[in-house]
Image (cartoon, rainbow, N blue to C red; front, side, top):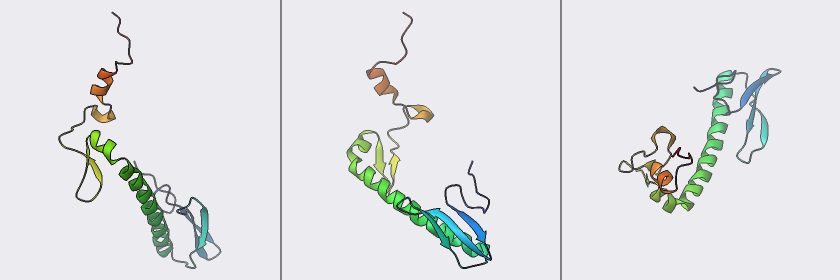
Length: 121
């Protein structure tokens, strides 16, 4: 279940505070610094839009960083049954199925290396 803060923004997207007659944004920038920004507006709608824009910029930068990690490891992803979709994301290939059920545990690898549980026999 998604959580929202008091101003209706998703949890982690920052917050909005009324200081005097104008709204201020408090958010984390791309580099992880806490920023307090004066919106110079008394309109909560406008402040929420600006907060969402800042959150999207941070999310886009995070996704770019994660894409770099994935691109460095494309060979291991292919061996794990992932393929690049038309939109550029890596998705589980249909032929790979889900060998571990909802937890994603590779039962074949687990059997090859021995189960962690000791048998009673």
